[in-house]
Image (cartoon, rainbow, N blue to C red; front, side, top):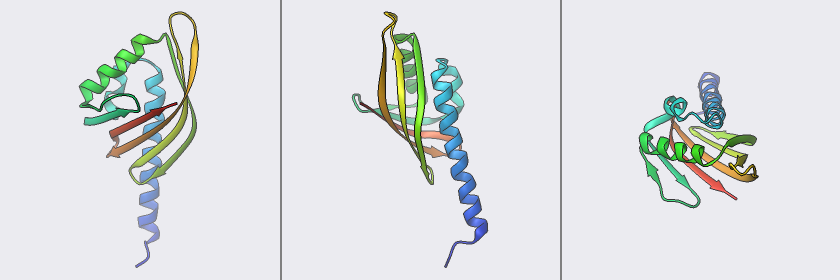
Length: 128
């Protein structure tokens, strides 16, 4: 049976909301105040980066964010592409990191975010 227009509308609105959660999360992450990330992260969030082990739990993920924020004097994210499929949001973004020596580096990144409700439950990040 074909999906009704009402069901399609509800699903479409949910995907837009998921996209907005991730867009806002990336903007807040750049602000370098990990406490502001709390509402975005599910208590059981799991973070996985290309070069590290998984980090499980909101408190541990926030600690990792704090470590990154302390390591750099400037962090900026420039979103290039975003795609949504149900509860999954995929991003291509550029990450600008500046150290206390003044030297800055751009990294190309790909992110995968799975949402449960309005919180990120899985966050995968690939850096290149």
